[in-house]
Amino acid sequence: MEKEKYEQLAKIIFISALEVHKYLGPGLLESTYHHALVHELKLQGIENRSEVKVPLFYKGTSTGKDFYIDILVENEIIIELKSVDELSPVHMAQLINYLKLSDKRMGFLINFNVALIKEGFKRVVNKY
Image (cartoon, rainbow, N blue to C red; front, side, top):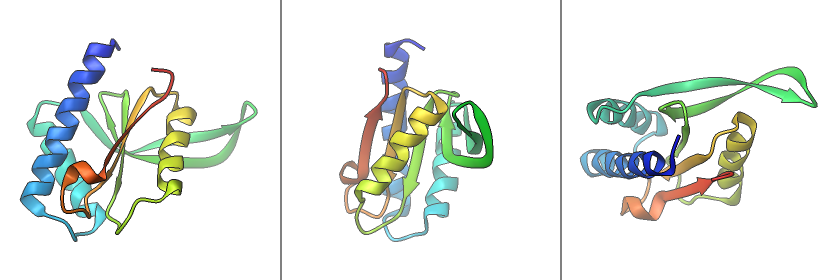
């Protein structure tokens, strides 16, 4: 995927998260925002999948363990959702690891439990 397409999708993801936050407000469960954001992205014409299973390999061998990406946009961009009082470094580490393990280039960590969505919206790139 070309950088222009990533940037276009990034803008739509932010606008979609803003719309969900504006409509629902803070203070709900993560799963509520998850369902709403999946729906909003579809309304915007953006292909996405929810709870995408990715097998964990260690030194070339399957561990039998899987991890789950909250939302995968256009099979390229990871969205990790939270609804917490404050994002912690472990939340960011989780997204960074998901990017590395799934060999994706861009991800977003979105915390909906904030007054303004821009305060809870973090972008991360990997080999961009």
